[in-house]
Length: 96
Image (cartoon, rainbow, N blue to C red; front, side):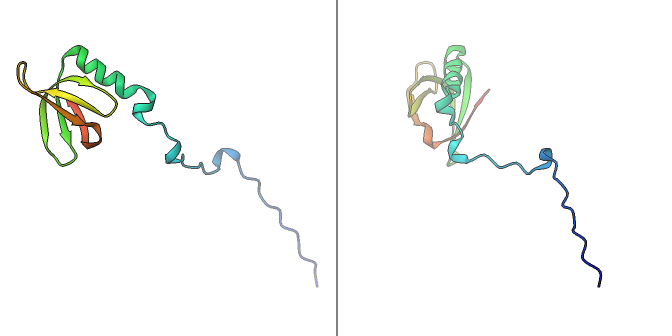
């Protein structure tokens, strides 16, 4: 009987290694990076008209007047009332 040949293993190219997906718990949230604050401040300074869409589908149009860590206010008209909206209920904000 002939002895078995030892098989060589191929070395893998390190560039072809599968990359790990980032851990979602370690990603920075927008409110921690300052990008959310900068965006809301720019909307206030430019007095841009925005549409705020809530998670339940309700829409509000107006100008953002004030913001803080948990909520912001939207003025529906120049002399009209302001609505305070909690950020956790917002789906997205779009400029008109």
